[in-house]
Each structure stands twice: as structure tokens, then as C-alpha cells.
Image (cartoon, rainbow, N blue to C red; front, top):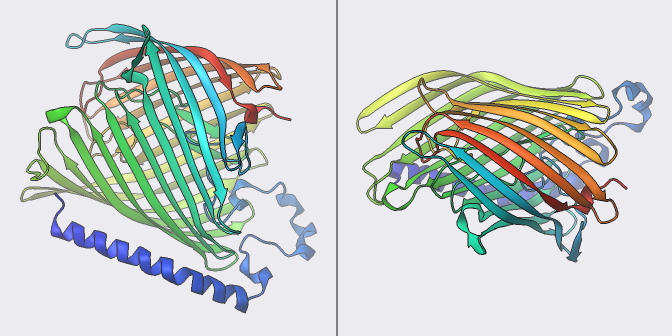
Length: 469
């Protein structure tokens, strides 16, 4: 159970959000009626100076928007189009569906024997994307999957994923958005999404879970972003967030909550570069296996504070990089003891377009509560990928990644993956695909497997939105 201090912090945070939500419309209306349009838009340029800035074209992803107002496709770095794809009825549509055969071969340890598993998996996406007036947008994405083996539905691959995005308030100087991501797996199994996905057109990067375990997994991540453009070049964003994760079965259930937030200040030095400062505060409340709720006698709290400098730059028309560097301090509270640690903090992302090919890499340090591992310790993760459109209809991808907990002797795991897709019918948007992934996990801890796993999948995917017209 959370302490009175933690409950008080949550109440103050909720009160702050309510006050801001009530005040924003009045403040935005006053600015719109009291300022010229040319002075409101921080991303705009004077038309008379366009010739002077010709060397900055094409516009870089840094200049796409001063606030994060884009909605991404579930599990992907691609943007939700905002118009109907596939088949549907008005704002409700189905943009993709797939049927695949899966062969899962697990090489266990002496304590956990190996096994081979075969199934047919059905997957689809359902989207409801609707404009709420001129300045708001509601998008709900649902991606279920179902496995069938020996004529019966099998729970191991019957997973549920959903994203809710709401652009609450958008004006030239204000942007307020809410996002909630839910994931449930009957048996923890990372299947269906690319573990690392890159969009070279927008320099977008998304990392998905690749860890596997024998127990069910549930996670929910929620955040609210309130961003304000202080001037044409300067903006600030405040983003409170909340995470809940649980894994295990019955008395062996492990779960944790995390709440906190971040403050980001950014300054655009040019069309191709942005620098800034970032502060992040986070409290992780972890409840160990076998602990009833309430009371949580085997629970402890970890508080993180991070201060870092940030930078994003388009190095050329096809090179884009972003990163941050700073310090993190953590305080672990268990019973009457407190332990403080200091860490280097850093992130780095790089995207490169190579003609009909692209490559990307990403490094991050942070918590693992929404990525398959319940722990109060931070972890380093690095991913890389290379995409090659060999022919007009043939795509090939190869990639890999590694995750390691920061503390000595902590959990670690890696993956290597390759994917081939061939466009069978352009008019129908029908693709044939084959994917192979090799994984390794170091120890059977935190409801995770230890050993090697080979995962083969092959089948047909219907996705007309991917076909270039």
C-alpha cells in the first residue's frame, strides 16, 4: 500500500492537472485574440526570408513540430494517417490483418527442459480515429492475436494490445495530449511486433518488448503532456506519467507501480538543430512475490532524479541524430534503511536513409516496467536495424539488440532477428513474409525464461496502406 506521503503527492498532481485543463482554453483564447498570427506560430517563417533559408530544405524532423502532437501506429514508428486505410465504416476501420504459422523452439537449462511449440496465429488491427472539432483528435487502436493448435485456441499467443491517444487541446502556442498503452499476454510472449522499428521519413524510433517468460504479463502506461511555446524558438513541456505492471500466477505474483514526470525545455538554434534541458523524477513502488495487498510488508520504494542536457540535429538531408547526457541519482527505501546511488544517464538515436535502404540505432537507460521485466533497477538497452528494399516488391530487414540491468550481476538478454517480405498483389495490399528470431536470456529470474529460443514465423499479411501509390 502507498504511504500517506505518496497519496498526498498523487492528489497534488491530480489537482495541478485539473487546474491547468480549466485554465488552458481561456489562456489560449486570449493569446489568439491579442496576438498576430505570424507571432503565434513558433515553427513558422517569414515568407520574405524563404530564399535566405533555402539551404535548410528539405525541412528536418526537428522542424516538423515544436510539440509532440503526432499519433503513432500501435507497436510501430509509423504515423497514424488520420484518414481511413483498409476497410471500414467512417472513423472505424481495419488497416491490417495477418495469418501465420509459428514454430517456437526453446532450449532450456538443467532446471527447465526444452520444448518445441507449433501454432497458427491470427492477428488484426482495429482503429477508431475521429476528429473532435478543429483542434482535437481521438484515436483508439486495438490489436488482438489468437493462436490455434490441434484445433483448439491456445492461450500462450492469445495477446491483447491497445493504445488510446487523445489530442485534448492544440493551438499555435499550446498542445495538450493524453496517451494510454495497455498490454496483456496470457503467457508472456513477445511476438507480433518488430522489436525495434525505425521510420526514416520522420526519424521516429520505437522499441518493443523482446523478453519472454512462463507467466502472464500485464502492463499499462499512461501520460499527459502539456506543452507551451514561449516564443518562436523556445518551448517547455510538462509530462506527468503513471505505469502499472504485474507478472506471475497466484501467490507468485509480482507487481509494481511507477509515477512521476518530466519537465523539458527546448530551444531551436536553427531549422536543423534543437538543444534543451530535461529533469525527470520517478518513484517505483515494487511489491515482491507472495505479498498480499494490503498489507505490502515486502514492498520497497526507489526514487530517481535525473538532470540532463538534450540535443537533436539533422546532420544532412538523410542523417538525423538525437541524444541526451546527464546524471541520475537513486534512493532505495526498505524498512528503516536508505541507499543512494549515482549513475551516468544518456540516450542516443541515429537514423540514416540510404537510397532505398535505411539503418537506425538507439540506446536508452531507464526502467523496465513496461518492457517485460519488473525491477526497481534501471537497465541499458541498445538496438540496431538495417532495412533494404532489394527490389520494388522485395524487402529485407536484419537487426539485433541487448538489454542489461545496471547493477552488477543483474539480468541480461539479447536478440537477433531477420525478416523478409514480398508484395504478392499490389492492388490488394497482400504481402508474404518470413521472420526468424534468436533470443538468449541469462537467468530464470523475475518470471523470465533462462536459455535460448528460436522463433520462426511465416504467412500472409494484408496491409494496403503500405503499398506506395
